[in-house]
Length: 395
Image (cartoon, rainbow, N blue to C red; front, side, top):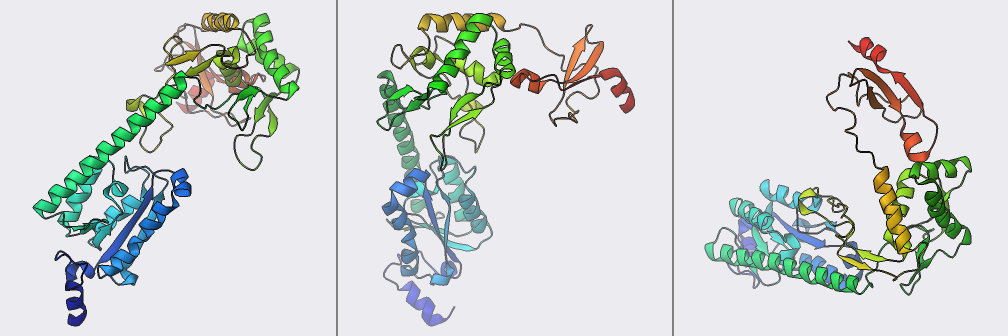
């Protein structure tokens, strides 16, 4: 860097005395983030302001060729660093001593978690990297600046908790009125007005009604499934996304679909909220849809009967529930530490699905089965193999 250029930087009106030539010699990283893709689409002014930080970097003295925008995290929450490739790249560049300043429109863009925020401050202080927002430029290695940055991070995390609490309370209040929108199952559609009605396709309605009528007659999901398979009856399903969203398609029946229909109180006209609550300790990092559990009957947060059009009465729903519970086997299942040598290792050569192990005679008899297509789709047993000869081949 030439002496004249360095002097012009140090006397630049935007320089508060913290920006030195050693900072200008390195990169200026502009970090751009929005929490969701909906915010990216709807809050375009905020996105423009964030990209406008490129101009602020040049005003602070950085040549445009050394200003880099990191925007890989558009649509990513700042509550964690998992899945935020842009933030991980930013930290890596700082750790490689490539960065003179990190710019964000506000501290919450960088991190909403105090843990992640203070880790970033530590690494920036270690490598002499400045942090800047619309309010000013801060040096994490300076005591006063570090105190202010810590306070900004605490306020950002507190704001997140307040926003989450308000949103959750709003959802609960709406749910208690039976007005919170939900994803409707087979046999229902949602009008543009938000009203939930039965599927207007008469064949779709008849198929759903058939599920309940057959279960009332036979009393087991397997018998209902076998009836559908024997008569080549398919299930109605509305496309949920894409260019054909809303169109009716017919899919082959399976045990899970039939079970969900029989266990869902919406078919009895009830509005329910809290059937599948999220347990924080069961959530997996970077996978926001994980951690869901199934709440027991009677533990649902909201239950509003006679709110929606029904296929069966509430009394019939409760009878079906009791029948399903009585059908559940109480056996201990196959021993996990049984004598089979190939348990969990065999793959069916016909359909490609993993084979299961079946024990008999207190674990002495072994068979390897491919029964998933039979269990879930009502198809014939794929194949059943004696376990002892196969185990002897591997010993």
